[in-house]
Amino acid sequence: MKTEIINVWPGSEAPGASDAHAQPRIIDQAKPYEPYDRAAYGVRCPEIALWYPEDDNGITLLVAPGGGFERVMIDREGSSLSTFFTAMGYTLAVMTYRLPHEGHHEGADAPLADVQRAIRVLRERARQGLNGRQIVMLGFSAGGHVAASAATRFAEKISPLRDSIEQHTARPDALVLIYPVISMRDNLAHKGARQRLIGEFPTGEMIDRYSLETRVRHDTPATLLIHAVDDTSVSVENSMQFFSALRSKNIPVEAHFYQQGGHGFGLRSLADSALASWPMLVNEWLRPRTLAKK
Image 1 (cartoon, rainbow, N blue to C red):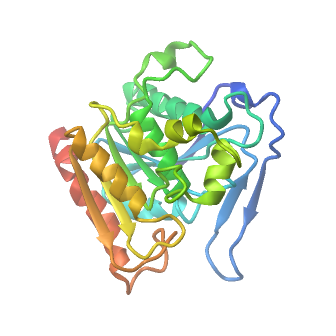
Image 2: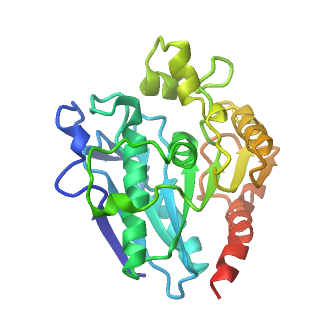
């Protein structure tokens, strides 16, 4: 399987990272004899790790892993997806993104700046024939907030760069959200993620701005939501609120709610669980897009 790692931004780090106090490091949380379970902390230079299929179906799946805006879980909700999705013909692109509480110029919008740029970079590479032309966002947990921000706030100009890559649209062609952080409201928010994103005492305006159920547009892309009803970390109400907001704008949306599964199930160790079906749900939902290529 061919792999590659590229920078999201030109140069050594993101333009907004110059005054940040982020200290980059990778920590492997795996127990002995277990697969890698690496977490990226203190991201200053966001990257995209790419896995290429033997038979390209025309779709690049851009993954924003979770980590509560404290870290980015690059294996559990990233590299572990590569075997299944490349076998199905997808180019898998797993990104890291800057964390909003570490002093970047864009503040709470640092992850959005990074994901907008990542989508544009992949569109430029698609123009050159290097990856699939359709860019589908897939986000887990706090990465779901990053992905859903890309799908609802793609028209906002966050990046200070004005190079040729910025001419490409930052709107993803479709959106897949797995147990996503959506709302910043008191009864719905993941407390740690909210504090790291908008602070301990956010204003009502900040809460509304980053509660993505309020940001759905008429041109937000079609969405698939997957969540476990018994998730006690990120309430399933996050997905339900986003589902209702999409329906109110007549956006095509599907949802699958597992009765059990909790939070952070990813793709590993699911062989005897109903949760093991979620990658096939994603593949079947995206199948009409792959057939459109042929």
